[in-house]
Amino acid sequence: ENLKDFIHELKGLNNIESLLEDKLGVEKVIVVPGDVEQDPMIKKELGKSAANYLKNIINDDSIIALTGGSTVLEVAKGMPQLYSKSNIVVVPARGGLGKEVEKQANTIASILAKKLGGTYKMLHVPDNLGKEAVKSLIKEPDIRDVVETLKRADILIFGIGRSDVMAERRNLPQDIRDFLMRENATSEALGYYFDKEGKVVYATPSIFLTLEDLKFVKNLIAVSGGKSKAEAIVSTCRSSNVQVLVTDEGAAFEILKIV
Ligand code: G3H
Image 1 (tube, helix red, strand yellow):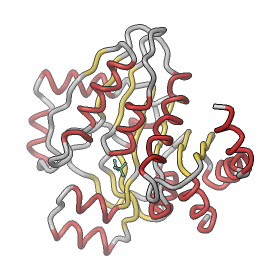
Image 2 (tube, helix red, strand yellow):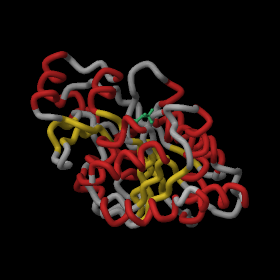
Image 3 (cartoon, helix red, strand yellow):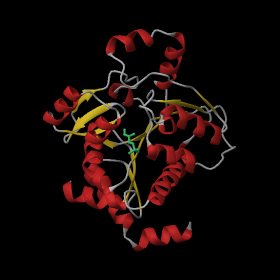
């Protein structure tokens, strides 16, 4: 840990963090050295760093909501076993994401819950469902229970993706991809696609935690790194009241070029 602090200091990352806090209007920015796109170990460091922050804000009875993706997965994996808190519930903010079960919010929720000695809920709703199907699903008692818990979350930990990459990963129909291109969609987070200014250009029908709901979440924590994600990170930070951003040096320097 001391060595990590030393490297952080040496690289001047403290200054970068405060600069980013100012420029992005985010309360706290944490930057880990390196770039997740250059070295997979850095994603683990990013995860550990976010887990470390998370650990200190969890209370008894906390409800932690989270999204899927490889970065949030590393947060759950990087969380040490915690015994000091009781009655923690972990709940997925999104349903399934294509075929990658390992990186689905459901899977990550179960991993994190075990680390925290808490319980988890599951949300089994495919990403590509139509609006009508979602509307009728939400009437199901099991799903309604999860959604109600979700809306009471005091912590939300979420990933940020590039709009083009996520549209492909989610296998969105061509007409929607064309639409996203025309509207200059830049980032995706929580099922929303945002443009450079942070304006919503498209919302996936299977969204249960809405932008409106986010206003009531006490701790909004975004975890996302990699040089190529810089624009996406800025776009999502502009879209909502992100309080904490955990990122890497690769993204941080690139962000400073555009803000
Ligand atoms: O919504 C964005 C994705 O969850 C980001 O996924 O962390 O695997 O790049 P990733």
